[in-house]
Image (cartoon, rainbow, N blue to C red):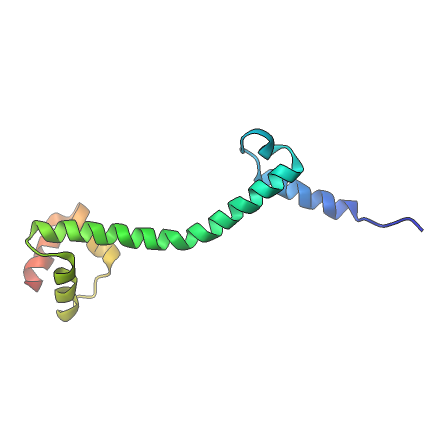
Length: 114
């Protein structure tokens, strides 16, 4: 009895990976073994960086709030401590947006917490 290998599923699996490797440079886009490794690595990076993106944005927001607070003579930690103690329920994303795009509104918040 001949060996059954299910070529349909194997080809579909390879085709899926080759489609994901589209746009890669050199042999990574058209040689199965190289493309498989490249796509696998890319998926690991994508998984890792979906989590890192959250950290990166939080750091960016903190930097922007710090810059805005220092324009009004406060440090970031002083500002955030006073925001929390005055029960102002604005998260860092919103505060950073106000500091960047609406300095008048941010100044009003700083004056309120001082």
